Amino acid sequence: MDRKVGLAVLGGGCFWCTEAVFQNLRGVISVKPGYAGGSIANPTYEQVCSGSTGHIEVARVEYNPKEISYLELLGVWAAFHDPTTPNRQGNDIGTQYRSAIFYTSAEQEQQAREYLEKLSGAYAKPIVTELKPLDKFYEVEDYHHSYYLNHGAEPYCQTVIDPKISKLRQKYAHLLK
Image (cartoon, rainbow, N blue to C red; front, side, top):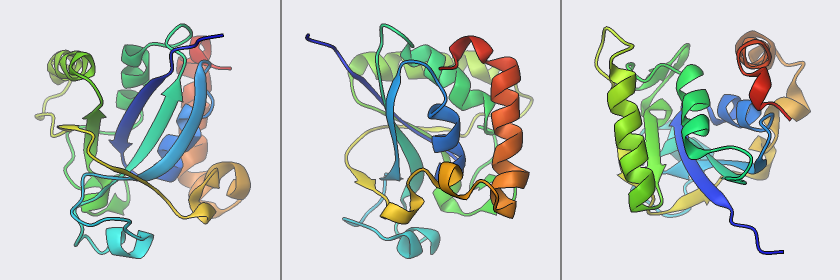
């Protein structure tokens, strides 16, 4: 069976949060936390957190476009972070938490650009989301994978990620697995 797989690479704050949200969506085949947009190859978590590499924490989402569209993924992404806040999402502060869309095709670039234009009307402040072609994606260290699933009882997960999952279940039930 030949199945087309879509790829979305999105930065919206801490990749633990972004990964946890996207893992719950129907049509999502896999979610990998990682880094994109920086200046060095194979960065470590410590290097990225230092702010010296220019990387952004991202989620690499493989999805089945017959079950969920790129625009639906962008809608969920936009609902779970503030695209008007530079270098910060909630209490997570640093350049690695920038809002970003890394496109993988001209079609994605056009869809993302149009989406961001529409989104700008919903905010009083300007959208600061970076829109860039995906050059390289670097997968994070193993201990970051499925962080929420493996560490849901930790205080960060309970105070930051649990409310996002609750909101997802309430607002986006139609997109859940």
